[in-house]
Length: 301
Image (cartoon, rainbow, N blue to C red; front, top):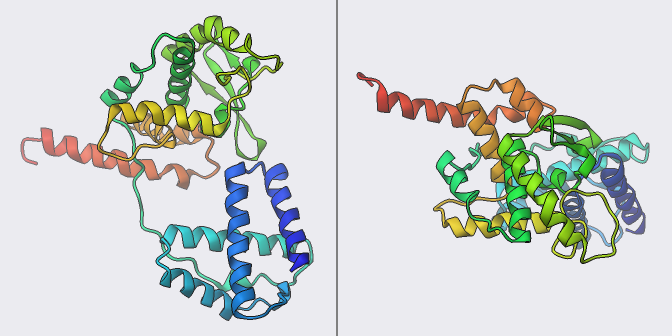
């Protein structure tokens, strides 16, 4: 088992520093690996060998998760994580065969992304007050909605990455890939106000020296978790009858663009999706919107 822990450590290091995976993803993968190998150790052998993992053992693990009422999405993620780990071992010539190549993951139900309507996002953006933290929060919300960037991408933005004059921001996405994203005038105004008053005030309270755009209440670099708390704070004030997360602002950005005539390729580029198929989920949303408008407005609908 000690060798397995070493291989897991090396794989997770590669995942975080080479593939630029988020801390959240690395943590989930570690938990997935621990759950699987604990199951194998408990049910089959006290001494686990990577090259003796069988298809039957994997299917038994799948059956256990189904019996324990795990969601299909969770099961699919765990199998995907394990398949990637074993593929890494094959690539490093530690194993000759990936036992997870013969295992099918459960078919996932298609879930339409939850997003805010135009009037809901407008209401959300009126909630931050004029305090220093309120100005910062408004700049965060405006930038998330204006660009559709991920929370993990937002916290990495440096002051020099945003061009206030030409309304662009350089975003460091997954796989350390940079992309240039336009920023709307409302977001530029909010960020400008934040940079003039709020950020200098918050930085004054700390001795830390950094050039990150967004700071926490003590002037230090803001974290993913803090951004999520900020978004959730104002979402809760709206008291909407739907489950909205910080990622919902990304869905809102994409959906509003498509509903107003943007083409799929453009939205793909703005979101930083490698595959167009990832972006295509938003076409289901716009189809529902088109159908609703058709039924509402066509005389013979």
